[in-house]
Image 1: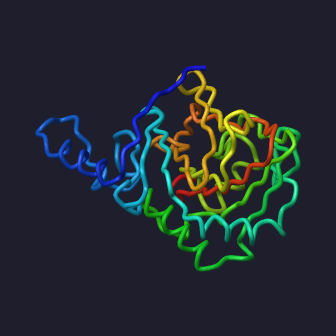
Image 2: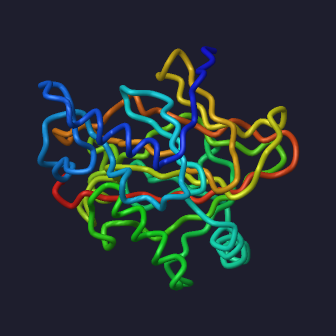
Length: 257
């Protein structure tokens, strides 16, 4: 697997560099702060990093497809709240069915819980933060999903976008639009030798990300033209020591039907 060495810089320095870069009179510069909404521009998708709290730090893992880590996307208080309200609701994780609804599948063996029935000011603020990142309405952010892995549990490589060639995918898209972007946020630290990495087999000859508490991994699931980006195939490697907590934040685009 290819090892990616990146320099992590504070967000305020990232912003300063972006401002300086965008002030240059070249035709290839892109101002991340003023780029139009996702479905209306024709350049490579870029999130609104300037919307993030100043305490966040950004680490770019891949330019194409665009994948970044956002350190301290959540606070410790938010993390503990999500685990507290999510743990009693955990059940066997499911996947979107071939025909309709959801189904248990051996490819996904974790436990999970959608938090739509236990929403709070904290969960709403997290959803709004995610929406601002992609210039979406907070109503287009799905209910947060807390996920728990232990004892070799895993999620085989899969896509977060809905497969419109299948009835289950078409039904899901018709309800609220396509899942245009994902924020996968880790709720605990995991030792480097404990497994549980997030794995993108089609990126950089195999990109692995070690979970770190409060850190989010962000990527777009679809291209600016609405076509599914199959390079975003990803999975959760088996956890072989301890446990892994995370929260899935999926943002829909109602214009992509």
